[in-house]
Amino acid sequence: MPNAFYRELPGFIRRNLLSVVGISVFFIASLTLGSLALYKHQAPNKRLFEDAVWASYQLDREVRDVRITLLEATPDMLDEVRLAYDILYSRLKVIERGQVAELIRRVQLREYEVDQVVADIKALDSTFMSLSPTTLAQQREVLNQALNDVQHATGQIATEVNHYFSRQRQADRRSLDTLIRATLILVSLTMLAGLLLLIQLRHQRKALELRQQKLKIANEQLESARHKAEEASQAKSDFMAVMSHEIRTPLNGIVGITDLLEDEVVTSATGREYLSTLRDSTHALSTVINDILDYSRIAAGKLSLSPRPFLLDTFLTTLCRSYQLRARGSQVAFHCKHLDSLGVVLADPDRLRQVLMNLLNNAFKFTDQGSVVLEVSPERQDEGTLLLTFLVSDTGCGMSAEQQEKLFQPFSQVDTSLSRQREGTGLGLVICQQLVKAMGGDIQLTSTPNEGSCFYFTLSLPRAELPSAEPLSSDTAAKQANILVVEDNAINQMLIRKQLSKLGHRVEIAEDGQQGVDKAAEKHFDIILMDMQMPVMDGLEATQTLRARGNTTPILAMTANAMPEDRKRCLDAGMQEVITKPVHATTLQRRLNAYLNAES
Image (cartoon, rainbow, N blue to C red; front, top):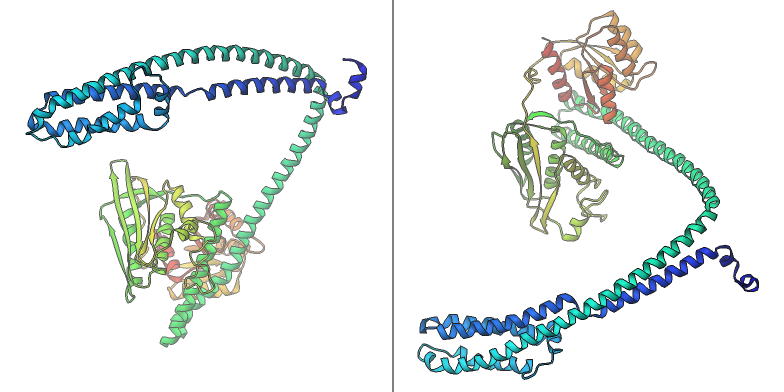
């Protein structure tokens, strides 16, 4: 290349001359391939050729079948004759219009035209339809002669079409040979471009090494960003745990004071109604907190199940009993349908209960009158697994298709207006869907506005056996016990002392973990209730210290820390049970009785 011309080139091209040449070769090769592809694309489709040959052959065969049927027909076989003709008539659609018809019309016929053959066949329609037992013999010869002429024409059409498209296939093969030769040329050009690019890449190696160094720095920055994101996620989880603790602690006081007021102070019907409203409000707040915590676990990918064997019949009976009580005195009837011999299965009963209660609560919430139904039906039973469908239906307000699309989206509600009548966070169904998916199912929905809704899902539950050593009933009255309460909150100290004293137990209070360890060393206690977060020494360290000293007293965590990892930390430290605040008196009594009765 002359130096003068080279200097006239733009600087970008001069610095990357070989790359430009390689790209130009690739462009020419691509243009060649595109031209060849366009040529092949404009040729008639091979499948259409085959369809055209087949259509002409079918037409000829159907004409023959009509003639045979006509000649063999007896007066009681007229329906068969008409059916054969109808089949022939239906074949005309392919010959009359469409791409196949256009291909057939390209064929040059010596004696007949396709349109004329079609017209001749259609002309026989009235004759075939007017056949009767009395006229069959008279018209058979006339029709046979007409069909003979038609068959001669269709036979010629089938032969000519076959010959024509055989020639077309030969032409296609020749064009394919041309395409192969062109492809070889393209391969040669590609190899040449590859060689040029290889030479250019050698010159760019240093630049690539520099880029790799920059990428290394970028990866280190990304890794640092990932660590910061993980720290932010952990900070969010820590915040959720602290928020839960700080809300549950005063909420426990509200629940406890409400129980004490109802038992010891308030005697009027109006006062008890106020307290019932207060209790419902605290329950609603507790539900909101639990939903937010569960959603936080889902978002962090930390939502887990705790499968264990349980008796499904008892589980359903207990669940249904609470909603039967709820339905009493209301305009909504509750029906529970399930078999009495479902047996023992391996699953997470707490999460399954959470899903069913959420669906049932929604059903009652959106049903002003009518009924709510929980139906559990086995789809398949064998020795190893039990396939069950859980269905919750109601006769409530129902939902439109647009509302159903929003239903399983986080923070989404059916009614978002300021005048909405039903409260909620919009997280319940999202959590339920994730829980059911974790169990191997998927919640489905059918709903009609003003008629009701139906939620259902199917789970495959492994069969299991209950542990051989069954705990004593927690409903049995327990002995009077010496109980040590390790709790730093003054309000909670007062409440737990009142609750335990009413149950007939003797109570001592320790304000932090260190005092709890000292008191447990000085005196024997039947059971210890231990908070987690306390000054001086927390509940986990206090429990570990007691276990290290050989103390075997049952220790039950009674804490506002509700995260799953908190429960695991408590059990790992040596505690036997975790009771999450707010604590109701009945729950506390049942948990204590289970351990005190076991000891006695």
